[in-house]
Image (cartoon, rainbow, N blue to C red):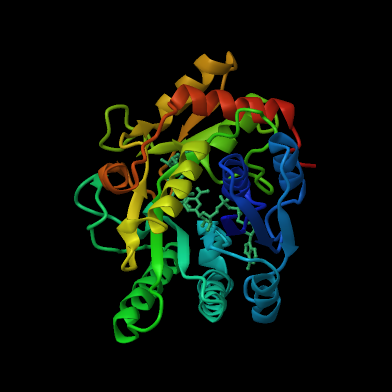
Length: 348
Ligand code: NAD
Ligand code: UFG
């Protein structure tokens, strides 16, 4: 019998890679995306690469009736929920837009899911929900303490999902919610075909797209934000994870939700990261080694809101989802570069 996954935000960076892996793993895929930050071209290419087709609906998840129509037309088994706005700086300027899109959008989605009796959900959360912690290797039991509106939308949605799951005990006659909250560390890279990848609007905020645009000559110089952190080379340390490894974690989560492990329902959070930190200078050096290109950079002051160092403890995802990363930093650099040189203007 078909196992059909509704992917919200499926035309976006991570969503398009998830659609590709889902199709290749034999799932049927239905995408809902309002194309606010993506292009349909990504999904056209996903279908070309896989030789398989998916269903696409240009729908905003906040539109209850349009979303309910999709659930009525398609026979959905589970939802992977990527749709959301993700720029930290923009969330500080326009917090209402972020709360409306990310929090209200998830309320509408879960409402329609409940009405359609679809109760398996994988949610895109972020390591940013941890805020600043005493330890640099984050375990899932650390307190939540997001420090910007974007992060708070993720923390709020997590709370909503835990409350929804807890409410099952008061309604024993209904089928329970089965929810996996996946806290991503720093996703980078692209599919090895070089045909889908990250296509940021305007000047990128994140390190890897900035590095590639400097290497290809679209941007003049990278600013390394801070060389005086208490880290071995003074630059910030993060846990970078290849986007293909990341989306494979979602398939493992779906498998777990549909297995005996979640027979009684529940809402559980998992870190998705490599489990090891890497500095900004290490990223630049690896990128230069793999691509043979120089990355013109200068040292610059720290960026407001940045932490010196954090990385994932991914042991829970290994234990309970049977997932771990398979790709290394060289793969991430090579695949990002392959995407960049083959698509200098992104999907345009
Ligand atoms: P993205 O912007 O490329 O993809 C998000 C997709 O959601 C886009 O296609 C956009 O058009 C769509 N969308 C946004 N609001 C919508 C709405 N109201 N209705 C329908 N579609 C809507 O971003 P991404 O990098 O692929 O991120 C996917 C998810 O993962 C997001 O929820 C993001 O917050 C989360 N996340 C991303 C990162 C990262 O570094 N990329 C890190 C942690 C968490
Ligand atoms: N950095 C630079 N120069 C740049 C951009 C970034 O030196 O031009 C540095 C940052 O200071 C940081 C590292 O590179 O030390 C990574 O920065 P990114 O902006 O790529 O990523 P962040 O760790 O700041 O944040 C990312 C996402 C967030 C998400 C978080 C989860 O942007 O949305 O990961 O851990 F919440």
